[in-house]
Length: 266
Image (cartoon, rainbow, N blue to C red; front, side, top):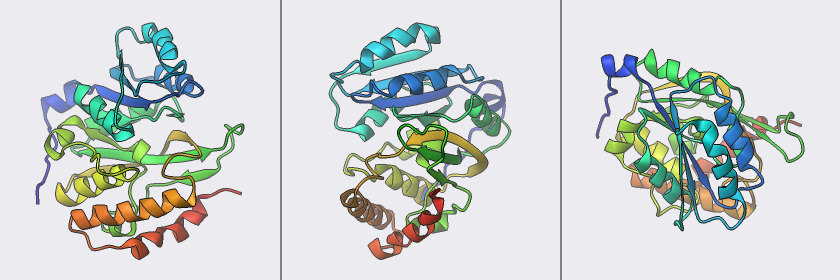
């Protein structure tokens, strides 16, 4: 078992740069909303990393057009990759911030004080990670909550049942990735859960939950759409537990769906 200890003292209080990573691929329809939500934040000590997988639409043109607004704080690359987790790993390797977070290319921050909330939490505590809540919307209904994902109930003991903090709300010290490693490319849609299992189980990271809606997500992501995706996710989540020495199986993990029914809003 490895235990990660947060960096404290002067390093923690004098500087708190946040690296935001957005992985894109043919995201022209939504990337402007994502970029604008970063620009609207009231916290300025950031770097924004856009990792594009070689888009054939106008994604990169939109990124280029908005880059000057960041005053040198936006960096981007566009090249073929091996999927979203490979892109996330590239972003983590490029990151120079003290804190690293992921903002998907079809998501956006729910309010303009999200990053300052994270910064204050890390500055005033010794934890390795901070997370909160997120909500989902349907196309054409941006102001109506279709599903609210609260991370409040999460405890590491619930990993065996497939529960984890809302991944888009999960911000972690870069030093944690340096010690624990990157997202596994052996998983198709469950590498974010495997990362959580690894961090909480193997590395015993410390954490803090903030009861705040951090990110707005559009319905229809790879891990939330279709019966086939859910079956694959069950298998990969069970595998992640097994590989990190947590007893679980697809039946135990499927029980979480009874709880998640209550997240949806009619």
